[in-house]
Amino acid sequence: MSKLVKSLKLPLILAILLYVLLYFVRWQQPEVKIQSEIFKEQRTALTKQVKKFLPSPQAELLSGIVLGVKQDLPYQLKFALRDTSTLHIVVASGQNLTILAGFIMQLSGLIKRKNAVILTLMVIIIYTLLTGAQIPILRAAVMFFLASLAQTFGRQNDGLRVLVIVAGLFLLVNPRWITDLSFQLSFLASFGVIIVAPILEKAMNFLPSIIKENLAVTLGAQLMVTPVIASNFHQFSFVSLPANVLVLWIIPYIMGLGFVFLFLGQVLSLPLNIMLTYFIYIVQFFASLPFAWEYVGEFLWIVWVGYYLMLAGVILALRTKTNT
Image (tube, rainbow, N blue to C red; front, side, top):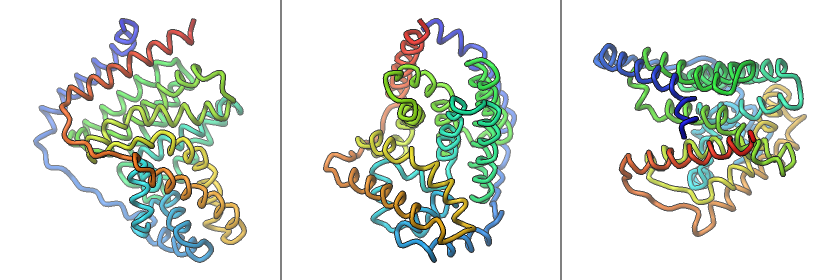
């Protein structure tokens, strides 16, 4: 535990100083609401293009994943996504962007680091623009990319330091973001993908590379965001982990083909339809299980503190074991 405290010392000090500063300087200032309308007409046109070549609900699902348009999702599918904690996949969320970028960064083991970073940046830019450059997406894009860049070309702790510093700078811009659910999920998902996932991946050396990489990214993000999701939506999904593991690995392929499909249309409709149908089947199967989810009431903050402390202990033990 002393090693963990030592590695987190500088980031924690910076975080505390920044928070105290913003609390006294900025909290009383009025909040500024920014509504993004970037590419709204283009997204509407692309949504119609998707519906032209794909059946329902596959068309609505693709529009949600690629364009962040979730208004047309059928209620049955939306409830299934909610009950399996996979709804974040089909909304323009920072958590979704973080997990997607995390999958791509894992390619650094297969291709050159520089190429993986460039590819990740390109995907982040395209996704950010297609989803309307919304504030939550912009925050997540900046946090994840700078932190992952620092970790890729620096040391393991560099990613954490940059992540904390960037988050602190965002809070200086608007202190109220610290209570914003999207900000919390983006930060925690980024932490899970950048810091936790590499440790989990090393502990899964007995698995094939492609499986352990996807599993580590999914598990890292889910472990960090689960308490926040449960406390905000008062619902805990017992099938969240298997459902996310079985569908998240295919999301980069859906998004990659989906980006091209938006402009080529029918050429890629068959493979996309197969992937989307698989996604829907997995989600609906797990949502139909009688033990899929359970309502949870209000939890004392001490419960979640205990959860994260235990998680930190497990992660530290795994890191120590894999480094010996």
